[in-house]
Image (cartoon, rainbow, N blue to C red; front, side, top):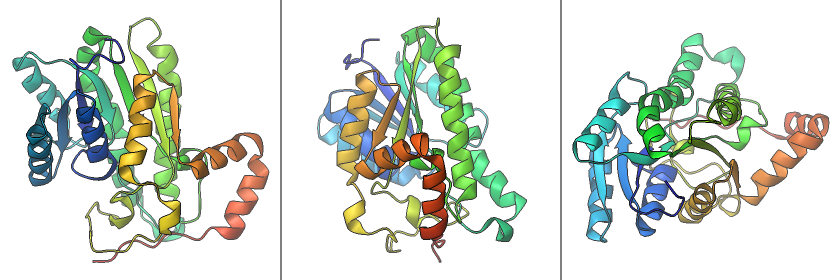
Length: 271
């Protein structure tokens, strides 16, 4: 698969809204086929219809990355149609918030089940198709994969873990023809800050992050897709994310001091 080969299909998990939906629109705009996977089937169907109406190739597939076999089933359905995805984006995820002393072990398990095990499951269930296509596996990380802030330890732990996984894959996949890209976004317009600790989305909840700091989804998706197609190992999205990653790499003690002193925990969205 060459980066610009629009004959390929892109499989995206967590594609029903936010960054996942934004990536689907951007890949489709560029002429790629997209296979959309998420739990919220109605939203997926609406997005697939939107993309097909605009002349794109899109299919919707209900699936949950926390369940064994759901991604494999989608791969099998595509194969029955003569389609092997050349790019797989492990985007499904959410964020659990709260001070560590107030969270339970089950909170952490629930976080890791989606954000870590979901990425691993997506990788393991799509690696056969990707190997045949000489494709690319894309992991949705976060700037919190570099810095951990008060009230966000479950999410940060999960994103540190998938960043480590991406780093290992560069070597593990060296002679397979496959490649990996890690996406490291800062604040991007999405539902993640409107999602409660059990994964429920509350669309009417106001985003607690100031609007001037949040990058529109479409803009972020353009940057991400451009980096993926150029074969980048990592794509850092938003200026503040690049700044934080720079300081975390080169001035870790100063970064830790500033975060502990100035950053407050984000409240969980309420029903």
